[in-house]
Length: 309
Ligand SMILES: [Fe+2]
Ligand SMILES: [Fe+2]
Picture 1 (cartoon, rainbow, N blue to C red):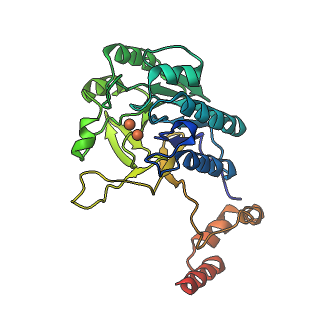
Picture 2: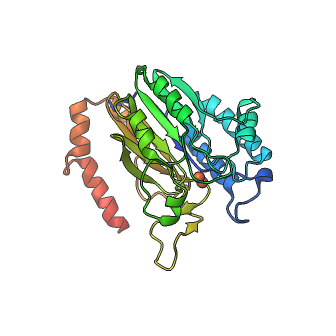
Picture 3: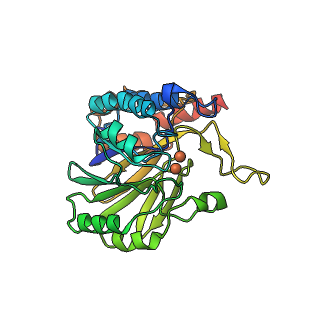
């Protein structure tokens, strides 16, 4: 049979929703509420188990109460339906008082760090926002708190979720609003059970390493930054290529996969009914069918793809 669940956790990593109150469009053209609804619908329609939904910041574009309420009203029921933990993270476009009140029913204007335990996997939501600014920072008090938290390893390790990626940025504008004094954070993380860092802020998918820990930056569901823009542009934001990431956590590996917000036209594929067929076959038979280039299964597929060409 086809083994379907060889992982311990699946996380939907969503970032930079930039919602506006009254479902207004961003730049008067980008239907940000629709984009988020669409990806939530895709997650609900998928056969993928989701253990946590992590939103890595810039939830609301200008921190409007309406935007947070819409977000909560539309995401909480989906998290409940999926049986997923819901993890919010502060971004530079968010404001602590509205974020705390509208998403956590907590009147607070202080730093918004929180810790979750999802089946032994610790998820830390770290607030890298600096009130009144777009760049990011982590205070001494936060570093001390984080070190204290990480002093005790979690059963299945830790995912650190933060808005500003702790990575170099090649774009000079992006660099100006990056995370300050990264080395101090590196000292706290190095040698701990942090297995991966999830971030946002860039509006394009990006990957790196920080303090020996892999970093994955999810793109945005609102608009994206076209890293391939021509030299006449210092930075180009476009209404396309929006995506989220699915994070598969295994005993010893973590794998990040990009999922488009848009539904594209299918050119080839296999129906889920193939699973039922596989139920009657041994593992060796399935491997032969799928992997052998000359199996009936692959010969038929080759003929089909040639027809399409
Ligand atoms: Fe953003
Ligand atoms: Fe941001």
